Image (tube, rainbow, N blue to C red; front, side):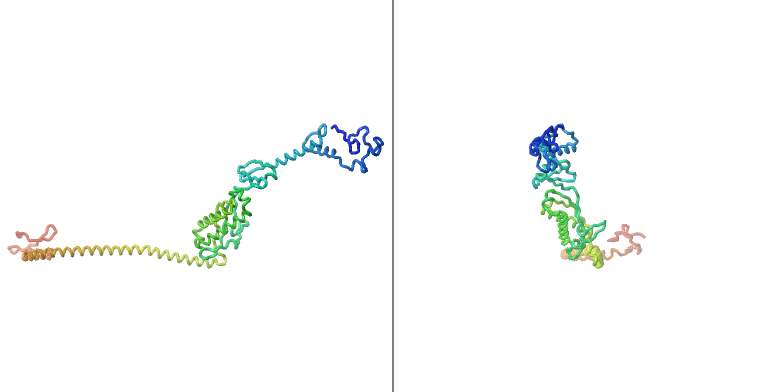
Length: 382
């Protein structure tokens, strides 16, 4: 290295060991007036020496070789500033993971949102900064209980709720959610987990307050879960929370511990009541239609009998009128005809015996299976 001579503040050349240099405070060069003030060279800092030492350390750190000549102090300072500037600019690089969104802030205000995973860049702090939010992560909160080692510990302040028929139930349920809007989630609500929990608890109390205990414990659970999810999401949207509810799951709906036995007795009584009611309804559904059918049959039979009797009576009346009209015109003939018809009606089912001229007796055989209405013109031979 070539060391350039420098001149001290007292006109003394140093740092190079020249011919007339300052060696041990000799008489050359003006005696004591060429010396530094009291304390000597070793007690005062030398700026040039400090710069050279900094340069040496920098070169040794980065593996560089010692230059053949010292850098100018001004250039060294500029080089140092430039390196610091490069390091500062390099702090603007950031990485976004697949499950994250990055909010880019410019002087504290959100100016951009990066949703694609990978390497990104923004101006270094304090000009710009980034906040990473895990939007794809599924979160879960428990209401009514706390979990520890797989066991659930009841929290009565959260779990005790009043049903629509004025019964107290102990409810445990879980809410699963994720971040839908990173900006709203980060800046518009304070304590997102606590907010989701309080809103979900309030929604569950509202839905349970409109539901009977029997329905809440049996077939109404799915309906309660759906309504609670919708109500919770509605309130969180009004808050601009940036939270999306995935599901609400009812884990248990039970009566309070001290009244479980009494509650079970009531439930058994209700079960017996329902069974008796169902049996009565079954009997009713069987007997009433049959009774209605029998009644309808009786009505139809009576109506048919009525029609038959009325038709017969009307026919008899018309027949009587016809006979009377004939009788009025020919009394003897009519009387004879009436007599013969009456005798025919009386004797049609009687056994007939025919007596011939020779006083022989022979039964009358009806070959067609019908009774004869008149005697043959010739008697049968015996």
